Image (cartoon, rainbow, N blue to C red; front, side, top):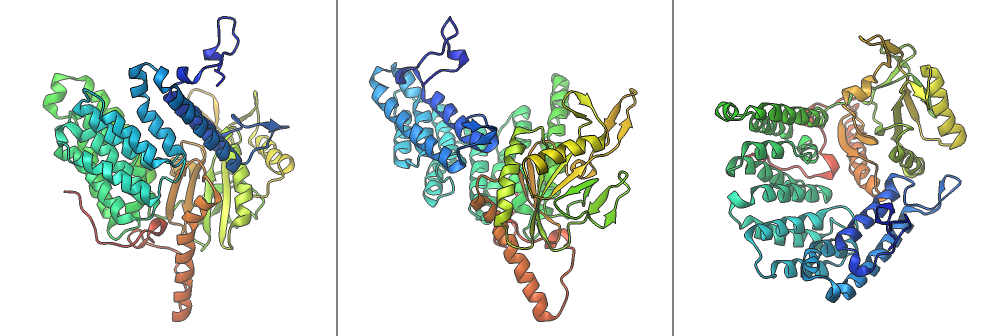
Length: 498
């Protein structure tokens, strides 16, 4: 494998690493970079005249082939590797095996690592946690297969058998990983059970305050809150969980007296959780209307908005299921997402709309420009150069004076309300305008998109059929507690944290 510039010789020329010199960790990093680049950017693709010439499935096949070649090379180089390097590579070799669906070989790597002389209790805890994570993480293979879940439960059971005082942090992470895995396969009951059991660690384990506060701000709560939001009494349960989490980030006065630096740490953690809460509080609730000043590839909404001159608002409770993608032309991952959106919209059934939403930044290239000028550049790129037909909404607010005497574009009311701070962000709302799904990035494949939309379409069609039979008119709104179950999850009795 050719090294990059940081693996060059003194003259600056690339050097070639032999299999014995390239660790399994290096192979894992390389394969993840190649696999992720097929979704995010042009980075690892052959490009001709600015156009990708490899499809995602083609890249996946290349990644699969390379991993198999590298696994063979690692095994052949095994005897020549230093003993400790060979041992330390076992967990990364397990990751490579799972990339290509070789679960048996991955288990052998875990077993070899655990069987080495002098294995410590902490090493075994970490191994069980890593095994669970690798089995359910999303790169390579099918992380949601029943065989993967069965194996994950096997290692989870061994972790659960360890003293909680020693296993607390690893146990929390493993339970959150299982929660996410069960969410992926639509088993909401198991997802909720694992989620609540994860947060119970904060109370049943002797953790330092800093450890407890770090667990409290785990971003996995975005997935957990999404599952809870559509269940009976789920939003009330979420309220209770949030109160528990916030209490975990309050520094005991006696401890603060001993170490005043914990005050700033606690404030930082509370602010980090506040950003997460600002997002997941939308789950199960009606999304704000889409407000924009320019609309392309669709008619502008009829309702005006006073947020900016020429702004119009699109209410989202009109029976149409919408996939809102927030991003911008200056974001490489958003460029890739737009290409996927253009293709995906042709596969959607009637009554579902993809809407790309972006906002002006105040400049184009290295020149400060007026909002309408910037919009014209954006329109030219998407419609005249790329010939995209996907509906596009652009917020081009006026430039307002800052206290320092400068000028900044007025923030988008829609992006601000939803606390969009990463691009692309996907928000899916049902026909009532209720937020049902939230994703950082874009869908990995059309089948992943279909998996999210299918339950929403069934709900909509069932609701419409029921109202036709009863001779009534469907309501345009839904209360939070009556919000439909997300992602096809079954209704079930409430589960409480104790």
